[in-house]
Amino acid sequence: MKVLMINGSPRVGGNTAIALKEMEKVFAKNGIEVETMQVGNKAIRGCIACGTCATKGQCVFDDAVNEAAPKFAEADGLVIASPVYYASANGTLVSFLDRLFYSCHCDKRMKVGAAVAVARRGGLSATFDELNKYFTINSMPVAASNYWNSVHGGAKGDAEQDAEGLQTVRVLAENMSFLMKSIALGKEQIGLPEIEPKTYTNFIR
Image 1 (cartoon, rainbow, N blue to C red):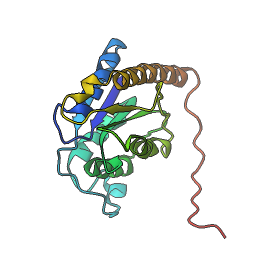
Image 2 (cartoon, one colour):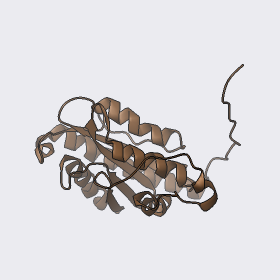
Image 3 (tube, rainbow, N blue to C red):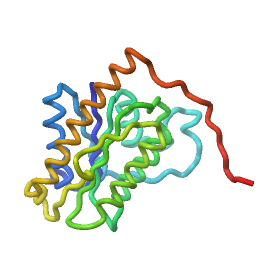
């Protein structure tokens, strides 16, 4: 089994990385392969709604988004972690996710998603909610923990002192591991749910 972890922080080895490393230990214990991509320090522009991905099968901008797409397609789970900027996720990460989820036409159903927010103090729950929306629009089950998935830390390395936050992400990784394995068994024994044709309603009269 594979998990793709997206680090939305521009800081290499910062507090967001500490949270993800804590999860990686748990995934390794459960025999789950992990690959981490750090995208917060890359030049990633937003979607321009050109529609090229519909015909070419990938984004018109050939950057980290196109690099991540096949990894996302192969993964059983996706972890998105972001520092909090003005009660929101890092703008670079949001541009990355908008384009990844729109341009990657792989079957996202039943891939397990988990979001982690990291901040000095406030804006964690708003960022957590923002990131979870990428999963819930794509039929991706969302893994839960024993608290909202948030880790506190301002200066580099501070997150190592947040014992509760690190426990929260460890529990998250354990629950995510169980959920991915359970879904794999379900696929073998039951199969995926049938897809109902999408009904689009742009307005209601």
